[in-house]
Amino acid sequence: MMQPLPNSAEGQLAQVIRRMGAAGFESALQDWFRRLVAQDNLIILAYRDGGPPQVLFRHSDLPQVFSQLDATYLAGAYLLDPFHDLHVSRVPCGAYRLRDVAPDAFHRSRYFIEYYQQTTLLDEITFVAYPVADVSLNICLGRDAASGMAFSAREVELCQRVAPIVTALAEAHWQGLRAERGAAEDVAAQLVRAVEAAHGIRLSPRQAEVALLILRGHSTVSIGLRLGVSGQTVKVFRKQLYARCGISSQAELFAMMLPLLSA
Image (cartoon, rainbow, N blue to C red):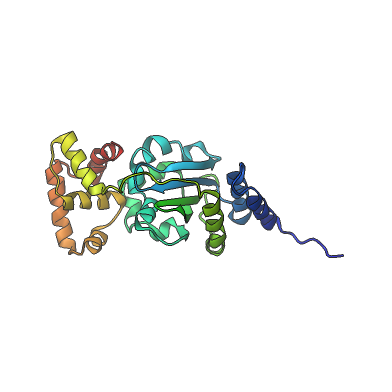
């Protein structure tokens, strides 16, 4: 008689497959991930071109991880998040680690200092899937203060290996999602209008673009590469932006712009 092999992860994956398209799918998916990489938290977001992302599932043992999700992130700060940029860029399906896709100065950005750092998140891996046109799913596994540990190289590799399975399951389960009507709005153009309406300040499209790149955590060098200009030109743009807004620091820029993104 064949002896049973330890296959707890495979058995849990079978539960995910059984619940596909039915209640309990998200919880089964969470349990499977726990067998694989023992994440501290899980959130599933549907990003669309119009409007804030939709939260399809969230779970964390620490309340502070998602305590500002609704009031800050969904209200507008998501526009500064590296994972939202994956949606805008329409990256291929797969697993992406935050530290690999974040801007080079992300940890010095005001978004990181004033929002992200407060979540206690230490590391994140997200699976990107496209269940319908213009909708991207982010199935995001996080490590936070509960464990105090980042994902290991083996765990990252494991996520990359199972990514085709995760994305196929997600696309089948959430194939009924709908995209928002209307074309995607350029965030820089939105910011130009919002700043003028709120403060009577008329920013140029380039100044608004530089403001967003600064807030997202791009260094002078990174901004220059994105815009195809020299670092010195970027410094001129930043100086003009700060002078136009009557501010002198990134902290003041964040305080001024975040409520306008929310609006």
